[in-house]
Figure (cartoon, rainbow, N blue to C red):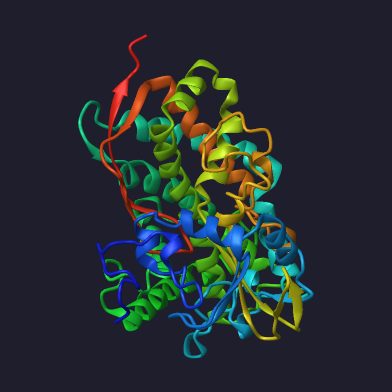
Length: 423
């Protein structure tokens, strides 16, 4: 079983200046679990923005840490590939024995048609319809929360709201919606002993259970003469997707489940964290609620729910004075680019009136930018509109428990207490 990281669980984390950067691995999960990443990325941006790590659990890789360089790689699919066959989009190469192709792990032209197939789910008309649903559910969840007593915000709010939305997108049985949460957690938690104590075999077994469940849904909806407006119906009737192999179906399923769940769920908790760390900004928001759209954009930048995306070099490429060789693994650290002081003034500060927050990298750019970004922003906007109506403060009672994962920067637990508005 993989150890928790190069720093022992709970061990001392040395400052960036004391590290041997010739061998240091910034994917060490313990620094991500303890949110001790910031001085490391600041050091890299200043001293070695295109940095080579020769050895890690995931093999050798390049770290791209500056905003400008990340954009250059993300926009250049001609030289930097997302193909599953070359490793895909995460630091861990896709397993040859359990290959799950998905459209985000494809290059044009294979990538284009499947993406277009599901884009209608977030068309403007659908977003307008979702807004009413999201508000009703947000009101329901918030009105059911205890007041003036501790509870876990991650479980009671972030997971509930995102899983409810996911059930709508899949037209999934509402009473079984936590299955979607579990499949999302398992997908990203293969090496997390609290999620998959049985390791690879448990991970594979649970994902195959997900496939078996949805194959039944696929069969039923593919036979319908009037296709529904849900993700499975779109895939089952799409010209480019109706005949895809079962493992490609599973890959796209998990992509949509994780994409529709983990990042929004993480930011719903990350926004509470930000408001507690920067109470003056929360006071400003309460005084000027018209700043909510700007706040949503800033929290997506400041928190950065997706830590990175990976590419593979298709040829030798010069970047930042370094030569990236054909076949090399290239990690675009969005979380670092979003805190690059060459782009964002005082980037570690959370500022809800930041004028250039929209330049964040959290949704990716280029052909693989996030399809659901407007829906994610809508969910966050409505959540905070309803919070401001009800509560004077969402008090975080202790530092949250974070996931030991550099990809999805999620929270395992965040204990809070609600203080209702008095006027």
